[in-house]
Image (cartoon, rainbow, N blue to C red; front, side):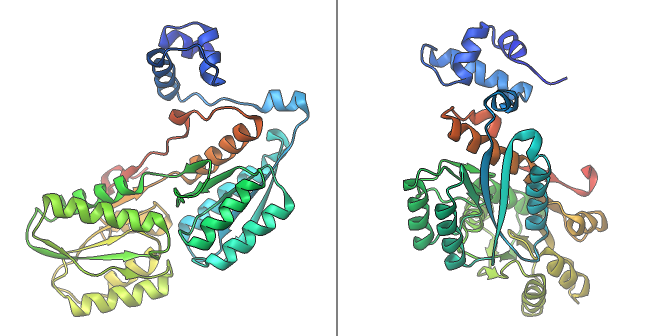
Amino acid sequence: MKPTVHDIAKIAGVSLATVDRVLNGRPGVRSITRSKVEEAIAALGYVRDLAAANLAKSRTYSFVFILPENDNSFMIGLREEVRGAISRSSAERTHIRIADVPPFDPEALVAALEKAIADKPAGVSFVALDAPEVQAAARRVTAAGIPIVTLVSDLPDSPRDHYAGIDNIAAGRTAGSLMGRFLSGREATVAVLAGSMLVRDHRERLEGFSAAIGEAFPGIHILPVLEGRDDPALAETMISDALRRHPDMAGIYSLGAGNRGLIRAIRKADVPKRPVVIAHELTVSTRAALADGIIDAVLNQDAGHEVRSAIRVLKAKADGLPVLAAQERIRIDIFLKDNLP
Protein backbone atom coordinates (compact mmCIF):
# COMPACT_ATOMS: atom_id res chain seq x y z
CA MET A 1 0.00 0.00 0.00
CA LYS A 2 1.34 3.42 -0.94
CA PRO A 3 2.06 5.81 1.95
CA THR A 4 -0.37 8.70 2.30
CA VAL A 5 -0.37 12.19 3.78
CA HIS A 6 -2.07 10.64 6.83
CA ASP A 7 0.99 8.39 7.34
CA ILE A 8 3.31 11.40 7.05
CA ALA A 9 1.28 13.34 9.62
CA LYS A 10 1.28 10.39 12.03
CA ILE A 11 5.04 9.78 11.86
CA ALA A 12 5.94 13.48 12.01
CA GLY A 13 3.41 14.14 14.80
CA VAL A 14 1.80 17.05 12.97
CA SER A 15 -1.57 17.92 11.48
CA LEU A 16 -2.67 17.22 7.93
CA ALA A 17 -2.75 20.97 7.35
CA THR A 18 0.95 21.20 8.26
CA VAL A 19 1.81 18.36 5.88
CA ASP A 20 -0.13 20.14 3.14
CA ARG A 21 1.78 23.38 3.77
CA VAL A 22 5.13 21.58 3.51
CA LEU A 23 4.14 19.66 0.37
CA ASN A 24 3.00 22.85 -1.33
CA GLY A 25 5.79 25.11 -0.07
CA ARG A 26 3.49 27.45 1.80
CA PRO A 27 4.68 29.61 4.73
CA GLY A 28 3.69 29.27 8.37
CA VAL A 29 5.74 26.16 9.25
CA ARG A 30 8.71 26.29 11.64
CA SER A 31 11.97 24.98 10.24
CA ILE A 32 12.19 22.19 12.84
CA THR A 33 8.63 21.08 11.99
CA ARG A 34 9.33 21.25 8.27
CA SER A 35 12.41 19.04 8.83
CA LYS A 36 10.28 16.47 10.71
CA VAL A 37 7.79 16.32 7.84
CA GLU A 38 10.56 15.98 5.22
CA GLU A 39 12.21 13.20 7.26
CA ALA A 40 8.86 11.38 7.43
CA ILE A 41 8.47 11.76 3.66
CA ALA A 42 11.95 10.27 3.11
CA ALA A 43 11.40 7.42 5.60
CA LEU A 44 8.08 6.43 4.03
CA GLY A 45 9.27 6.84 0.45
CA TYR A 46 6.23 9.02 -0.19
CA VAL A 47 5.81 10.15 -3.80
CA ARG A 48 3.32 12.92 -4.46
CA ASP A 49 1.11 11.95 -7.40
CA LEU A 50 -0.22 14.91 -9.36
CA ALA A 51 -1.92 12.71 -11.97
CA ALA A 52 -5.43 13.02 -10.54
CA ALA A 53 -5.23 16.79 -10.20
CA ASN A 54 -3.79 17.15 -13.67
CA LEU A 55 -6.49 14.90 -15.09
CA ALA A 56 -9.08 17.24 -13.62
CA LYS A 57 -7.27 20.17 -15.21
CA SER A 58 -6.97 18.26 -18.52
CA ARG A 59 -3.30 19.27 -18.59
CA THR A 60 -0.67 17.47 -20.66
CA TYR A 61 3.03 18.15 -20.12
CA SER A 62 5.41 18.11 -23.08
CA PHE A 63 8.99 17.20 -22.12
CA VAL A 64 12.16 16.69 -24.14
CA PHE A 65 14.91 14.30 -23.00
CA ILE A 66 18.22 14.89 -24.80
CA LEU A 67 20.30 11.70 -24.56
CA PRO A 68 23.69 10.63 -25.97
CA GLU A 69 23.34 7.87 -28.53
CA ASN A 70 26.22 5.42 -28.17
CA ASP A 71 27.14 1.86 -27.26
CA ASN A 72 26.98 2.48 -23.52
CA SER A 73 25.07 -0.04 -21.42
CA PHE A 74 24.07 2.49 -18.77
CA MET A 75 22.88 5.07 -21.31
CA ILE A 76 21.00 2.35 -23.17
CA GLY A 77 19.29 1.50 -19.87
CA LEU A 78 18.57 5.18 -19.21
CA ARG A 79 16.98 5.47 -22.65
CA GLU A 80 14.82 2.42 -21.90
CA GLU A 81 13.62 4.11 -18.70
CA VAL A 82 12.60 7.18 -20.71
CA ARG A 83 10.82 4.93 -23.20
CA GLY A 84 9.03 3.33 -20.25
CA ALA A 85 7.87 6.79 -19.21
CA ILE A 86 6.67 7.38 -22.78
CA SER A 87 4.62 4.18 -22.59
CA ARG A 88 2.90 5.57 -19.48
CA SER A 89 2.21 8.93 -21.10
CA SER A 90 -1.56 8.55 -21.36
CA ALA A 91 -1.89 7.73 -17.66
CA GLU A 92 0.59 10.39 -16.53
CA ARG A 93 -0.62 13.02 -19.02
CA THR A 94 2.81 13.60 -20.52
CA HIS A 95 4.12 13.87 -24.04
CA ILE A 96 7.81 12.96 -24.00
CA ARG A 97 10.18 13.18 -26.94
CA ILE A 98 13.73 11.78 -27.03
CA ALA A 99 16.32 13.84 -28.91
CA ASP A 100 19.45 11.85 -29.83
CA VAL A 101 22.87 13.49 -29.87
CA PRO A 102 26.38 12.05 -30.39
CA PRO A 103 28.24 11.49 -27.10
CA PHE A 104 30.68 14.14 -25.84
CA ASP A 105 29.68 16.57 -28.63
CA PRO A 106 28.94 20.06 -27.21
CA GLU A 107 27.89 21.49 -30.58
CA ALA A 108 25.29 18.76 -31.10
CA LEU A 109 23.95 19.25 -27.57
CA VAL A 110 23.68 23.02 -28.14
CA ALA A 111 21.77 22.41 -31.39
CA ALA A 112 19.33 20.11 -29.57
CA LEU A 113 18.79 22.73 -26.86
CA GLU A 114 18.16 25.41 -29.49
CA LYS A 115 15.55 23.16 -31.11
CA ALA A 116 13.92 22.71 -27.71
CA ILE A 117 13.65 26.50 -27.37
CA ALA A 118 11.90 26.64 -30.75
CA ASP A 119 9.52 23.78 -29.80
CA LYS A 120 8.65 25.41 -26.43
CA PRO A 121 8.12 22.24 -24.32
CA ALA A 122 7.07 22.38 -20.66
CA GLY A 123 10.54 21.18 -19.65
CA VAL A 124 13.88 19.82 -20.86
CA SER A 125 16.14 17.18 -19.31
CA PHE A 126 19.59 16.38 -20.67
CA VAL A 127 22.88 14.68 -19.87
CA ALA A 128 25.11 17.72 -19.50
CA LEU A 129 28.51 18.46 -20.98
CA ASP A 130 30.36 21.07 -18.95
CA ALA A 131 31.37 23.34 -21.82
CA PRO A 132 30.93 27.15 -22.12
CA GLU A 133 28.69 26.86 -25.17
CA VAL A 134 26.41 24.42 -23.34
CA GLN A 135 26.27 26.76 -20.34
CA ALA A 136 25.23 29.60 -22.66
CA ALA A 137 22.58 27.47 -24.36
CA ALA A 138 21.16 26.45 -20.97
CA ARG A 139 20.83 30.14 -20.08
CA ARG A 140 18.89 30.71 -23.30
CA VAL A 141 16.55 27.80 -22.47
CA THR A 142 15.86 29.26 -19.04
CA ALA A 143 15.38 32.75 -20.49
CA ALA A 144 12.70 31.24 -22.74
CA GLY A 145 10.83 30.16 -19.58
CA ILE A 146 11.56 26.44 -19.99
CA PRO A 147 12.57 24.51 -16.81
CA ILE A 148 15.76 22.40 -16.98
CA VAL A 149 16.74 19.21 -15.16
CA THR A 150 20.25 17.91 -15.77
CA LEU A 151 20.40 14.13 -15.81
CA VAL A 152 23.29 11.90 -14.57
CA SER A 153 25.91 14.62 -15.20
CA ASP A 154 25.37 18.10 -13.79
CA LEU A 155 25.87 21.69 -14.96
CA PRO A 156 25.84 23.51 -11.60
CA ASP A 157 27.05 26.89 -12.87
CA SER A 158 24.06 27.10 -15.21
CA PRO A 159 20.56 28.26 -14.26
CA ARG A 160 19.24 24.69 -14.33
CA ASP A 161 16.39 23.98 -11.90
CA HIS A 162 17.47 20.58 -10.59
CA TYR A 163 20.04 17.79 -10.97
CA ALA A 164 18.76 14.20 -11.07
CA GLY A 165 21.79 12.09 -10.27
CA ILE A 166 24.12 10.86 -7.56
CA ASP A 167 26.72 12.87 -5.65
CA ASN A 168 29.66 11.98 -7.89
CA ILE A 169 32.36 13.28 -5.56
CA ALA A 170 30.95 10.99 -2.86
CA ALA A 171 30.89 8.13 -5.36
CA GLY A 172 34.54 8.72 -6.24
CA ARG A 173 35.51 8.90 -2.57
CA THR A 174 33.66 5.64 -1.96
CA ALA A 175 35.59 4.00 -4.80
CA GLY A 176 38.87 5.34 -3.38
CA SER A 177 38.12 4.00 0.09
CA LEU A 178 37.18 0.61 -1.33
CA MET A 179 40.30 0.48 -3.48
CA GLY A 180 42.55 1.34 -0.54
CA ARG A 181 40.94 -1.30 1.64
CA PHE A 182 41.04 -3.97 -1.07
CA LEU A 183 44.77 -3.24 -1.49
CA SER A 184 45.32 -3.23 2.29
CA GLY A 185 46.89 0.23 2.01
CA ARG A 186 50.11 -1.17 0.52
CA GLU A 187 52.37 0.53 -2.04
CA ALA A 188 50.62 0.08 -5.37
CA THR A 189 49.96 1.54 -8.81
CA VAL A 190 46.35 2.12 -9.92
CA ALA A 191 44.90 3.08 -13.32
CA VAL A 192 41.79 5.19 -13.88
CA LEU A 193 39.58 4.70 -16.94
CA ALA A 194 37.19 7.59 -17.70
CA GLY A 195 34.90 8.41 -20.59
CA SER A 196 35.76 12.08 -21.03
CA MET A 197 36.81 14.91 -18.78
CA LEU A 198 34.21 17.01 -20.64
CA VAL A 199 31.50 15.59 -18.38
CA ARG A 200 31.38 16.80 -14.80
CA ASP A 201 30.35 13.47 -13.30
CA HIS A 202 33.59 11.87 -14.52
CA ARG A 203 35.70 14.79 -13.29
CA GLU A 204 34.02 14.76 -9.90
CA ARG A 205 34.43 11.00 -9.51
CA LEU A 206 38.14 11.36 -10.28
CA GLU A 207 38.38 14.24 -7.81
CA GLY A 208 36.72 12.23 -5.04
CA PHE A 209 38.77 9.10 -5.80
CA SER A 210 42.08 10.98 -5.80
CA ALA A 211 41.20 12.83 -2.58
CA ALA A 212 40.25 9.66 -0.68
CA ILE A 213 43.41 7.86 -1.84
CA GLY A 214 45.63 10.83 -1.00
CA GLU A 215 44.16 11.26 2.49
CA ALA A 216 44.13 7.65 3.64
CA PHE A 217 46.38 5.63 1.31
CA PRO A 218 49.44 7.73 0.34
CA GLY A 219 51.33 4.66 -0.88
CA ILE A 220 48.94 4.22 -3.81
CA HIS A 221 50.11 5.92 -7.02
CA ILE A 222 47.40 6.90 -9.53
CA LEU A 223 48.46 6.84 -13.18
CA PRO A 224 47.34 9.61 -15.61
CA VAL A 225 43.67 9.16 -16.46
CA LEU A 226 42.77 7.22 -19.61
CA GLU A 227 39.87 8.71 -21.60
CA GLY A 228 38.11 5.87 -23.40
CA ARG A 229 35.08 7.93 -24.54
CA ASP A 230 32.83 5.18 -23.11
CA ASP A 231 33.77 3.07 -26.16
CA PRO A 232 34.32 -0.63 -25.29
CA ALA A 233 36.81 -1.18 -28.12
CA LEU A 234 38.89 1.87 -27.19
CA ALA A 235 38.69 0.96 -23.50
CA GLU A 236 39.96 -2.54 -24.24
CA THR A 237 42.92 -1.17 -26.20
CA MET A 238 43.83 1.36 -23.52
CA ILE A 239 43.61 -1.07 -20.60
CA SER A 240 45.53 -3.78 -22.50
CA ASP A 241 48.28 -1.28 -23.26
CA ALA A 242 48.34 -0.05 -19.64
CA LEU A 243 48.66 -3.62 -18.34
CA ARG A 244 51.55 -4.29 -20.74
CA ARG A 245 53.36 -1.14 -19.59
CA HIS A 246 52.57 -1.76 -15.90
CA PRO A 247 52.33 -5.55 -15.40
CA ASP A 248 52.40 -5.02 -11.62
CA MET A 249 49.34 -2.74 -11.74
CA ALA A 250 47.35 -3.50 -8.60
CA GLY A 251 44.05 -1.79 -9.33
CA ILE A 252 41.79 -0.20 -11.94
CA TYR A 253 38.99 2.27 -11.27
CA SER A 254 36.56 2.51 -14.18
CA LEU A 255 34.59 5.66 -13.45
CA GLY A 256 32.68 5.77 -16.74
CA ALA A 257 31.37 3.20 -19.20
CA GLY A 258 33.15 1.00 -21.74
CA ASN A 259 33.31 -1.77 -19.15
CA ARG A 260 32.76 -4.55 -21.68
CA GLY A 261 36.14 -3.66 -23.20
CA LEU A 262 37.77 -3.39 -19.77
CA ILE A 263 36.51 -6.88 -18.88
CA ARG A 264 37.82 -8.33 -22.14
CA ALA A 265 41.25 -6.75 -21.55
CA ILE A 266 41.52 -8.20 -18.05
CA ARG A 267 40.46 -11.66 -19.19
CA LYS A 268 43.16 -11.62 -21.89
CA ALA A 269 45.92 -10.01 -19.82
CA ASP A 270 49.11 -11.93 -19.09
CA VAL A 271 49.94 -10.44 -15.69
CA PRO A 272 51.29 -11.98 -12.45
CA LYS A 273 48.14 -11.08 -10.51
CA ARG A 274 44.72 -9.85 -11.55
CA PRO A 275 44.21 -6.20 -10.54
CA VAL A 276 41.45 -5.12 -8.18
CA VAL A 277 38.70 -3.57 -10.31
CA ILE A 278 36.03 -1.12 -9.17
CA ALA A 279 33.49 0.01 -11.76
CA HIS A 280 30.24 1.94 -12.08
CA GLU A 281 26.74 0.75 -13.04
CA LEU A 282 25.31 -2.73 -12.60
CA THR A 283 24.72 -3.91 -16.17
CA VAL A 284 24.58 -7.38 -17.71
CA SER A 285 28.33 -7.34 -18.32
CA THR A 286 29.41 -5.92 -14.94
CA ARG A 287 27.04 -8.28 -13.12
CA ALA A 288 28.60 -11.28 -14.90
CA ALA A 289 32.11 -9.95 -14.20
CA LEU A 290 31.26 -9.54 -10.51
CA ALA A 291 29.99 -13.11 -10.36
CA ASP A 292 33.18 -14.34 -12.11
CA GLY A 293 35.54 -12.37 -9.86
CA ILE A 294 36.81 -10.12 -12.66
CA ILE A 295 35.29 -7.02 -11.02
CA ASP A 296 35.44 -6.62 -7.24
CA ALA A 297 32.83 -3.91 -6.63
CA VAL A 298 30.27 -1.93 -8.62
CA LEU A 299 28.82 1.45 -7.62
CA ASN A 300 25.33 1.78 -9.04
CA GLN A 301 22.76 4.51 -9.56
CA ASP A 302 19.10 3.84 -10.30
CA ALA A 303 18.42 5.16 -13.81
CA GLY A 304 14.68 4.62 -13.33
CA HIS A 305 14.66 6.77 -10.20
CA GLU A 306 16.58 9.49 -12.05
CA VAL A 307 14.12 9.59 -14.96
CA ARG A 308 11.09 9.56 -12.65
CA SER A 309 12.72 12.28 -10.55
CA ALA A 310 13.36 14.45 -13.62
CA ILE A 311 9.72 14.14 -14.69
CA ARG A 312 8.40 14.90 -11.18
CA VAL A 313 10.61 17.98 -10.89
CA LEU A 314 9.68 19.28 -14.35
CA LYS A 315 5.99 18.81 -13.51
CA ALA A 316 6.46 20.62 -10.20
CA LYS A 317 8.24 23.51 -11.93
CA ALA A 318 5.51 23.73 -14.56
CA ASP A 319 2.90 23.89 -11.77
CA GLY A 320 4.88 26.32 -9.62
CA LEU A 321 5.18 23.78 -6.80
CA PRO A 322 8.24 23.15 -4.57
CA VAL A 323 10.60 20.22 -5.10
CA LEU A 324 10.83 17.77 -2.19
CA ALA A 325 14.57 17.26 -1.79
CA ALA A 326 14.21 14.07 0.28
CA GLN A 327 12.05 12.48 -2.42
CA GLU A 328 14.47 13.31 -5.23
CA ARG A 329 17.75 12.25 -3.58
CA ILE A 330 19.46 9.54 -5.67
CA ARG A 331 21.41 7.08 -3.58
CA ILE A 332 24.66 5.24 -4.35
CA ASP A 333 24.38 1.44 -4.12
CA ILE A 334 27.45 -0.77 -3.66
CA PHE A 335 27.37 -4.29 -5.07
CA LEU A 336 29.85 -7.09 -4.41
CA LYS A 337 29.73 -10.67 -5.61
CA ASP A 338 28.08 -11.59 -2.33
CA ASN A 339 25.06 -9.27 -2.51
CA LEU A 340 24.10 -9.41 -6.18
CA PRO A 341 20.31 -9.09 -6.50
